[in-house]
Length: 206
Image (tube, rainbow, N blue to C red; front, side):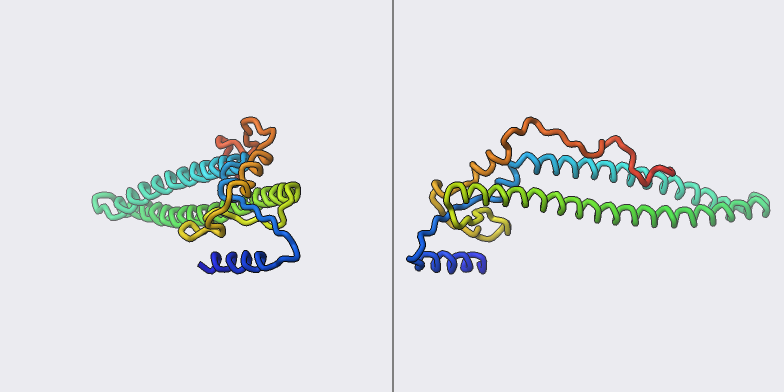
């Protein structure tokens, strides 16, 4: 609601300025972002990274289950009075080793998951900023070329609030022209990011 009244105040101020003719255009930045081919490349790249991280987490999880099984076997044997005292001591030592190894593996799992989640979030934000910078540059170029001195965003970025522009004439909408210019010359772009089959760098010692 604040956003709406902020734009309403701006439009009223512009309407009251008789000294200069204002030309206002609108752009649906949400639609431009979705249809820009580099957005699809970025999304595919992030998905590939997620698959790599997920595969390594599944490997760690499998190792943890194996260690848990070895621990239970050793712990059960250590309490078995049917075997000799020396054998029980060996199993007790094995159980302690497995318990320590299990603790370390679980810590590794949690640290890896948290670190990769942070990396993915940072990568997503960086790619998004890069794309928005290119979109903004094209909007400015198009607005200047067409003689507009004010461009408003007509997308509902808040998700459940009114957009900055409630209604506008299609003649003022630069969205399609911006999308066409951004995607000019693109032909089935392929990502050049890491192949999803590539091993995780942290897995070199595994």
